[in-house]
Image (tube, rainbow, N blue to C red):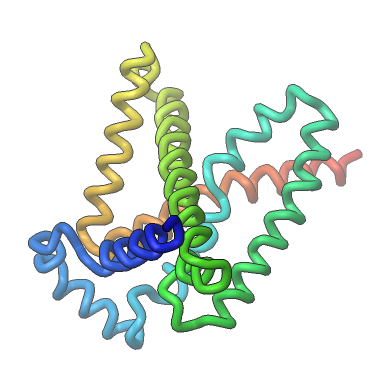
Length: 212
């Protein structure tokens, strides 16, 4: 039946989640990650790195790309933001409550599967993965377009843009394979770089408003 197939897929997903296909790489970085875990009281990340992971996940390429795209639609785009923000906050609240209610769960896929059944859990997992893959492509393309302001050759042709985005993805993949310490530091640095333009824009707007 569909439910039994979904149950098997869920079990396989759990096995995959617990299995590292790059054990040789992982064993090479194990000592560094274990030392970092010991230094942070049994946690893989410290406070600032964990905060940067959350902030970096919330402030993505969409914050810098979508305003320009929605500006073409005038007030309709503004209304869309007013609808999307409360919806995102509601979703975050639901996820936080579910996580608090089932702290032993390994992830949101298991929470959904336990509440609604194996099939919804698997569908949620696949849709999440598709969304992450799509978001990674957009983030990489956005990074290349920003870098092209300094190196125009990066967007000289569609092929050059695609190669640049692929290089960004592979570079970040290599960084993550290098261990949690390096990935965490990189996340903190990029989060600061993302926050600085937003703070500058807010400061400019406040300055313009105060002079009127």
